[in-house]
Length: 534
Ligand code: C2O
Image (cartoon, rainbow, N blue to C red; front, side, top):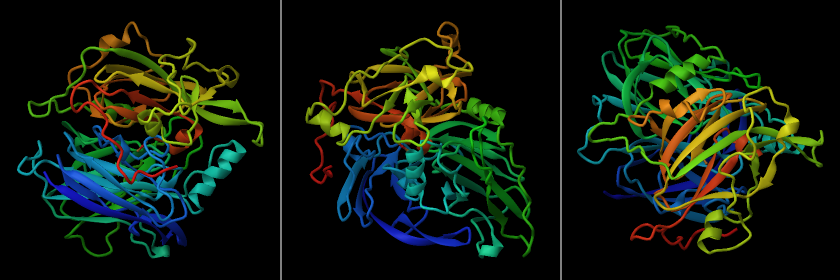
């Protein structure tokens, strides 16, 4: 294993998209940002220098951060932000993971433009568990706003309403071929007969997406840096924070084939229908050949999302066994959704809030992990409810008046190495929606899911405890539930939230506090000297 050094200069840069120019915040002047390459077991040091007026933190999404919570990155959870002119070196080891992940800013809405891929290659000499691809390519999906992104969300919060949707989606930074703006969009050149490993990252703020390439099937081999049983599909479903590795076999003779990404939304919530496109171009293609277009899935193609998620299974081989916890110490049930709270400063006297078990999370003014480590009282409370306050028909046609949330900075405490089964129940209150739910510090196994209300008597009989997919972000279906299991083997404070940034902002978030173990190497490491102060 080796030590790899990176320097991330956070700086403003003018970019032209959709025919107009605007300054955006970038890492090293790039959008998307630079790729972080390492091998399993390597230690990575990233010095982040803040050259902009805004606060900055970077989260290494999906990196386990065993005992190194100080390098996890969510602002006011594991660290105070890096202020203008300051720097902080993230220092972590990539233990037991290989595949594609992403890094992104984790303060306000900065991740709109501050994000990039993490590629963890297998240890030297260790092959992939699938045929070696001829070439690898990173494909990052994002969103573009014509206006300033922080202004978009700040105004929405003041009004107590939903923010404007983005003006375009992007593929490797580009909405698509736009001759009138002299933009070619992103193009991947391929050769007939070769295999390409596509490392697909959804770095969008607020949309789960479909990904398709005309004329080609894809073989899925990994999600969220965990190998899967290979399966073929013509449509990938990928939520914000999720990553998918797929093998593209260039089995056509020549031509331009369109890549298209389009949003999934199976409710009436406002979303845009913007499709972003890119091109797969065979090297033998004559000039000016029009692209063969992709058939875009309908916006509400729930069955495509279900088929895709149901096909995902851990590889569960001898070398890569699925270590599903078979006993459960903490059986938890969390409802997630959005409700309406009174708000005296809001235009309508009320505002939308996100909640888990009816608690809308209030960000503290110092980092939870620091408060925990230094035993500072008054920053958070340990009374996060492990089950909802009242039994309820969660997926019925409820009115908002029954659902007013309470506010709090509450954590749920877990003993070191205890096992957790968590059923996440989406609610139909105010705005039923699919929630890509992300847990920091752990991979979890997705042992079951369903539509409607979770049935504690019968649903567990159908749980998959053999080869469930292992990941860090899972889509909880609209008006349905998902059950996950994980082992609390990582001491620290770990954020869990909906990875739709607008829901996070509204309070759909909480944190687990995992205590130190008693044995050697079971405690969180001391904080680094350059950890920022609030
Ligand atoms: Cu990728 Cu807490 O986020």
